[in-house]
Image (cartoon, rainbow, N blue to C red; front, side):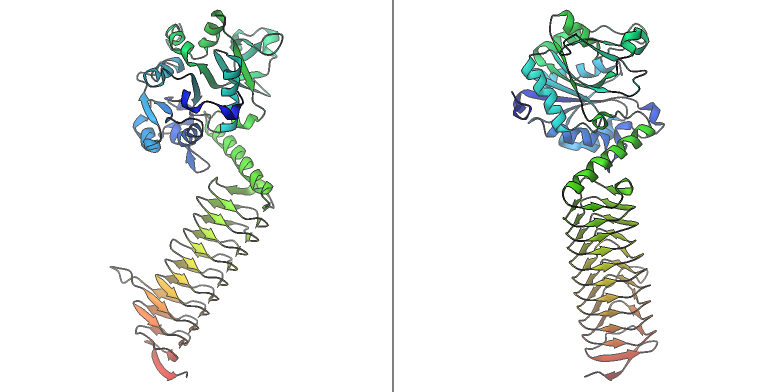
Length: 456
């Protein structure tokens, strides 16, 4: 059976996530530390969900309530209490997983395993009839890890030998155990009952199943992972940083294959929910977060952050922040502009440096000068917003809206005291303080601003 043809209905996935994570030096449970914007446990559950029809089983321990809340109804949770090792943790899932043909077991602190790699592992277990198929990797420095000893043919695993027990020949082996297994379900549960507690700490180790399978005359197979970065285990903050770098390389590589230019991938931070159109150029030190979508032929960065926003084609954003906003085609933003939640920018708009927009709509072709703030405003098409313009939208109790009509001209340092409207083609003089509505085609100046003449 090919890996892509695995029997999803007869497979259960168990994620072991009960560890204390003491080496993280954190009050937060290790499973709730984030990698690429999502918690470790969320990543593992999302991967598992792509392999099976049933919800994955998560074995929780320390911080279990918070971990369960993070994955909500996406998994079935069971609790390991007290924590008596990985073998004991897996035993907590027996009632829910018994009856499945194969049991895939992964650890919650190995979050970069891909569905494709795990399908290969499941396929190896199914096609070989092995009691256990395990995932391995070649380590540059395997010191401290158990070595995987294979038979002379290289097909079967004979043992996992702990580092302290290795002979000189075994210590030279670079292949180590990752901690992802696919078990024959009929064999697993009775075998797990035969695992004895370790005499030193009383814990039940999952790796003891290897020796039991061999003693039963069953095969143990190993799949050597070509991508070592997919097998990074996270025990410390340093491990978390290595995993972040590996995930970033994986994401950035795929965008480049899709026709996006990253001028310096090592300083470009893109989360997995981001989509980018072809021929867009991403400059260094750019952060693209959340469910951001960027069109084609854009220029983004340098030193730019875009979060959960939609950008059209041919948009240029230079050294600016765009959050929870929508930007149409052919817009230029920055440098040093800030689009906050609810900004809707029409096509062909120019937003200058040190401009801030919040919960506002700018019509097509509008130009917003530097050192300006538009909050809770509706601005028409082809409007000029002079430098230093501010919508005074907050009266100390509630927010009010400003409306500016098409083709209006707002002079520099104008204060628009909301609620207020400026008519189509109306103009304000520099320094005007507008406290009353201005009709169409009028010019208003002064403090407070007064209409001094009709323009048509």
